Length: 127
Image 1 (cartoon, rainbow, N blue to C red):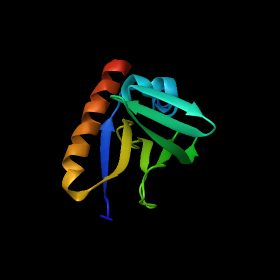
Image 2 (image 1 turned 90 degrees about the vertical axis):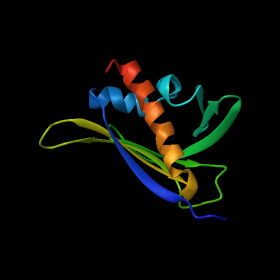
Image 3 (image 1 turned 90 degrees about the horizontal axis):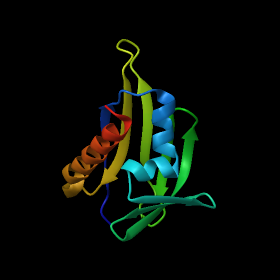
Image 4 (image 1 turned 120 degrees about the vertical axis):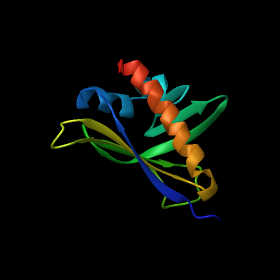
């Protein structure tokens, strides 16, 4: 089994922390930018993309700040996806920090996918 490579991305989002938190944690809001559709049942999120789906459970959640998902189909116990909100003390800019994992030869592709999804999020929020 190949070891996944962790990477982190930061995106400035012109939004209130409360609105952004809603977009990274609620199934209806996540289906607007993250996946084609998102279901939540019995503590499990199901993300649908182009006819396929992935299931994830929340392994940590800090209200108003972050959510961390563990993909249920993953064999790698150490991987997760974290979406975290941070506010810069100096500039007061709101950033969405994304921590994810990919195979070493797929990291750049994964980053481009996140950039595309964040472009969708910007369009929805109106930035």
